Amino acid sequence: MSKKKTEIDALRINETTRITGDRNQWIVQLRSGKGWSARSFVASNKRILTRVLDELGRVPDAAGIAALDALPFTHRQWGEENL
Image 1 (tube, rainbow, N blue to C red):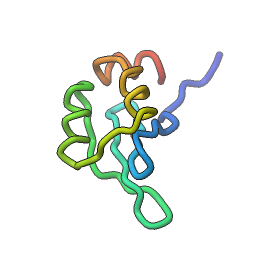
Image 2: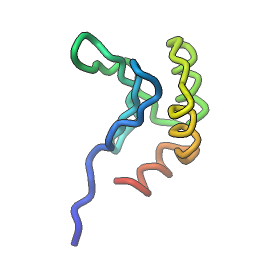
Image 3: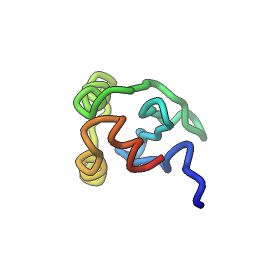
Image 4: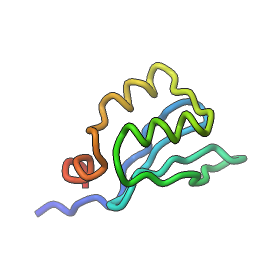
């Protein structure tokens, strides 16, 4: 029996922004010095996640748009598929 993951590999949104997630929420992380720091937590849906990115002034590049497009609409759906 395979062990379920507890968090995802990061989805790159642009050079200074990425999204990770755990069983409770997606986590928007911003590059901070040499590392990453959590800035926002979204447990609802992709529309809110993209709104948070917009409010933070984080514009996805082409790869980031593709990564966001690939996410299911809700965090719950994502968790069922990935955790």
